Length: 157
Image (cartoon, rainbow, N blue to C red; front, side, top):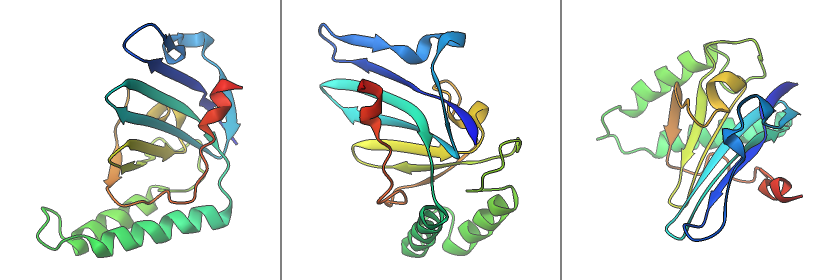
């Protein structure tokens, strides 16, 4: 298990705002086998959450499968063609990509960039579970986290 930052930043641009992720050493922590951070992209408010998830082996396998599908579906005219992306992905696996290696300093964030939400996960809180640090990462526009429950409502309980 790894300790992850558990916080929420919210601003409705009118009267209500909270910036729990800006509390420095006093920020809440949680335990999980992966850390996550999510940014909701809405014109009427700003919402950022970070926390923990506990992925099962099946959950990790589902993400790996979704990543493989995303790579296969990519247009061959992209700057990085499918074969090159697969080589990069395999290199990242050698760096404990989507593995629970809490001491790994080379962990890469896996990010899903969607129309309404950006989501990243990794196993090194210092590299991925921090609103001010966003690299290194590998980014997908397909639904690689499909079916994963990030339980963001826990921030309101």
